Length: 597
Ligand code: C2E
Ligand code: MG
Ligand code: MG
Image (cartoon, protein in one colour):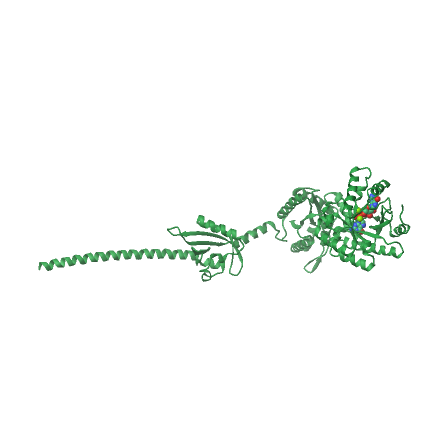
């Protein structure tokens, strides 16, 4: 009996022990479940956080393969999660940054554990966008990289609003032209460049004549429209690279960058005023407008922005005071010069149509045989009021305005015609030399003109000589070589005019197919008095002969000069001592008579 009771006690104790152990397991299990629930809750929170973030989030594994992205990522890039998961982050790059950029980025991520910077990525639709990217590295306890977390913010809206702000700060809202601020910056920048490049620039201020009256009579909206149209017209009237700005209500500023001369600034001023003279159309109605302009020049009228503007304002004020539709330079002398130049230019255009140009011919003689060997054709302008005008006062303008193309072609034709007509008068054949300006010779028409003139007139090509200056050979060596070779192939001869005054780089002499050197008259003038001129003339003769070229001296005015040149074996001479440039008929007489001495 006792044994049974003992047995029951043992069993009960055992049962209690088991129950306690089970309770312990149960409690541990419950704790574990609670912990999991908590962790799961935290995970849910993190995932919710990722989803509602406005920044794109990319999680990639240790080999940079994307394992998760959030909604914002899809919104920014256009890629759904399943389109990028499994791909490397490299597939999102735009290619706009170079290899070095990404390799530095990777190095910094590896060494520092994080990186942040601006990048350019490509959206699914191909569009590029700027973004701020922050990358953080996740490592396990052993320090091995398990994940990369990237946070991506789209900067395109921010950049666009910055650009809009920038535009508003620098451009005029009505006309969309640069405003006063940007005009100043552009002029200052141009001054710096002009200073180092030693070129000129001009500031032109333009005021609308009687704008108040226009506003009052047409109303302000029409006034605004007119300013808008004027702004667009002004942009069309100025060369690319020049800035047109609206400085205030009815005042505009034009930066003429790199104008070759004050005259060309004057011409630009005149072009602008003339262009404004064409009618504007507002509400189907033609409206006429005039402006006044003031011009100041760098460096003549000022070397800094403030002085240039002040002086242009003074000039504008003066232009307005002298009536509408005028421009004035800051200095009266400039205005005068520009005016004269302008008149000459207009006259020159008319002269061509009115056939006011003639050629005079200056004889060239052999120093050995005294025979007439050639003539140089020199252009003259028979001005109805000014009389015979020499080329120095119109060739430069013709070159600048492009009229030289027509004038030059005319000179070649006229000279060849004349040479043929002397032959027709039974005079001995004579070589005729025509001057070519640089602008002419770079024109693609040049070779074509020469060959067709020779064909049409029937003049033997070797009787036509073309004179070119050193400047051209140095400025455009490649064009020069090709053009001269083509001319040579036609059979004409080539001479270098004013030799010794240009760059005188001797290496070009052997590069080009030249026949003759013309010693510039400045070296002849003081012979026999100046030893240095004597030395130069002698050196040119020796050099020319060394290269198998003929040498001719220009501007020979005295017997001593002729004697010196003969003693130094110069081949030919040309100058007042032998004969001035003369009309064709007079030269015909010289040709018929034979050598003068
Ligand atoms: P250039 O070709 O060097 O012509 C020589 C110039 O020296 C001519 O001046 C001539 O009248 C002048 N001259 C000749 N002998 C003497 C002299 O003994 N003493 C002095 N003091 N001067 C003398 P011009 O006719 O006034 O021509 C000036 C320049 O105009 C020419 O210089 C030439 O470069 C250019 N030119 C003339 N006609 C034409 C043309 O048809 N086309 C082009 N592109 N340029 C031309
Ligand atoms: Mg000449
Ligand atoms: Mg000359």
